[in-house]
Image (cartoon, rainbow, N blue to C red; front, top):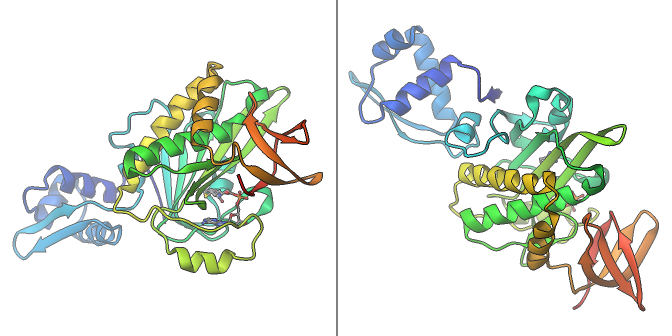
Length: 332
Ligand code: BT5
């Protein structure tokens, strides 16, 4: 099933009415009269609203009352009260999809979709970087964001780094956990991966036409189950989950707001702040690392990130800049 944040469906109208009258019981007949839908339709919508995780109490002869909200990242919940100007102002939610990234890529060119987000409860073909797989069961936050950026093509590689910083701000604020940032764009807790990012960019002559940012957050997932499946996969180094009684909607809203602020810094060329703040939270800088690049493996000490997010590695006095690749943290 697919839901969006803008169609005025019967289900949405019933839910909104229940929400705005949640101190009283509303009879099926009243709902049917006010919303001009049949009583059978009212009953069907209430059944679905319950399946979506809302608690609706029903009392014989009195009717229905909404007593608690859903934990799901439903599009109308995301956009309600969100403080962003563009990001997440339009949202789509899939109960199941192959990959939110694939879906977003299909929609990315349309100017109307700048800032649109695609969220899924679970993905059957979640994608990592370089053709790898991303395990995405129910309980995680799997989303893609479409962007039509103004910033220069030369800092495209800084964008995923900036996005991981935005997510760490949001996790700090909402979950009261301080994740670390592993180059290029992973978030970790105690050295294990709690979130990953993926960027697909489309270029037109010398400008970025659109970017699709895919974000996978292990919000409330069974770590052991996933670790078993992943043990032998490339770039695996353990799985962490936020696993607390946090509010997923609040986390996504906060992330979108932080991302919008950081995106504005990129658009106005204020990249120093991004680099400084990323470095403060980085578990990579200062470590001896091994890097797997397209040109083979190399070792060295990670000294800093450059203006475009490239990692500077020092080995026997020689500095090499790595733009893309996977790193393994060795000792300090
Ligand atoms: C990433 O790739 O970290 C990018 C992950 C992006 C996922 C989001 S979910 C929403 C959107 N739609 C998509 O289809 N994708 C994006 P990479 O750095 O290549 O890491 C992939 C590696 O991480 C795998 O080879 C596994 O070893 C490991 N892995 C897979 N699933 C994981 C999970 N849920 N938690 C931790 N590690 C995982």
